[in-house]
Image: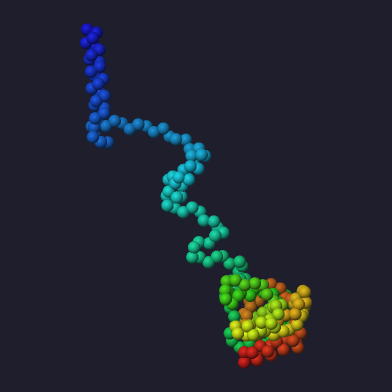
Length: 224
C-alpha cells in the first residue's frame, strides 16, 4: 500500500515538470511566468563605468552631444570678438574719399581734429585683428573722425619696399604723444574712420605748423 502511494506521488511530480517546460514561445499555453528582476543598486563606480561604456544614460549612447564648453565657438562660427569697440572699428573701415583738413583741438575729454589719440586700428589684411595705436585726427566724415596712424618704427631703411606696397610715411619727429619721446612717422596713404566714442584717451595736441605740414603732404599724396 505504501509503495503504491509513493509511486503515485512520483508520477504526478514528473508530469507536472514536463508540462511546465513545454510551450513553443512567449505566448504558448505552457509558458512560464517571467522571473522578477532584482533592481541593481547604482553606485558611483557603476555610474562611471556606464558613462565610459556608453550606457543609455550617457550622451554617447543616446546620440545627444554633451555640453559644449562656453569658451569654444562651434565649428563654422566666428570666435567672439574681444570688445564692442573692435567690432565698431571693423565696421567703420577706412575712408576712401577726399579729406578736408580741420584743426580744432580742445582737450575737453572729447577727441577733435588736431589731436593725437589712442584707439583700436584694424589690420588691413585681417580686419578681425588689430591693435591700439596713436592716431592723428585730421578731419571729420559725418559722425566719424578721420585719422592717420602713427608709428615709432623707422621706415627710412625700407622706404622702397614700403612704397612698392603703396605705403607712404612722413617723419614728424618726437612729441608729447609718446611717453619715451621716440621719433615718429605718420602714414599718409591710409585714412582711418574713427568712432569718437571708442577713442581710448587723448595723447597730445599737435602744433599747427606741424599739422599743416602733415595735411599738406596728405593732400599732395592723394592729389586732392
